[in-house]
Length: 352
Image (cartoon, rainbow, N blue to C red; front, side, top):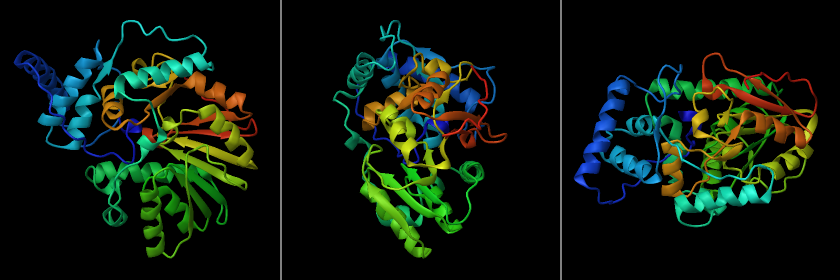
């Protein structure tokens, strides 16, 4: 389920929770069932069929208990992720407001977040304490899994480059670049590259790598709503847009930053069609994703883990003067891209 995992994924700290032996036995039974299905899995990927289904947990406490046991019992980060990815929270009655564009709806999402994390959301929560020198030499995609995992990531980056279809010298900006592997690829191509991220350590990591390659990348520290001057041929979000609470405001700003034939690429984002395998984890137009992995990331780190129903995503594009389409990767779900342009040149793939 790595379309839902941030590039900046870290092994979580194991909380010292006291569980009853009965609860531990119950959770271990569930884990045994999942491990029987996934023990041959050597990499993290999204399920390719709907023959198996996600397992519903009715309370958040069940999710947290599962997370605790998965953290203790899992031998690797991949195993922990695979376990959590098989479960989701299925609340009995959310009583969510009907208008996804209303302040009431936004307040509901933030109240739900506060229930999970225990505090109000702040974009500062998206920052990470990460070792600059270490991650400059060996970015995170080279740390998490084996060669198949890395290959899937590199393949996705290659597909983003193909969808971008920009010449040398094009102006490219990436939001939420992490350690900057996509931005560096564009820079090596000869593009004029800018990155925007709330975490200053990521800027240092990107600059260190750029210096090694004798490249120039402009780094802007700030939120996605940070004003940026100039026009761009390509704007990229890779596993980043789903942290955008004020996504409508951001799209309005980005629309004005595009050149006439420019495009915005959203890749690796949890944009879910009605028949998507993960659709049970998003029972509303937009909001917190209810898979166990995302909920535990919210609770542990305070990250804002949002998802968007596909119909809602197309609607927000339309409301901000953009036309959207989906370009499905034939080999790599992470490489599937949603593309937004000022023109109507894209034909929307109908998955609703």
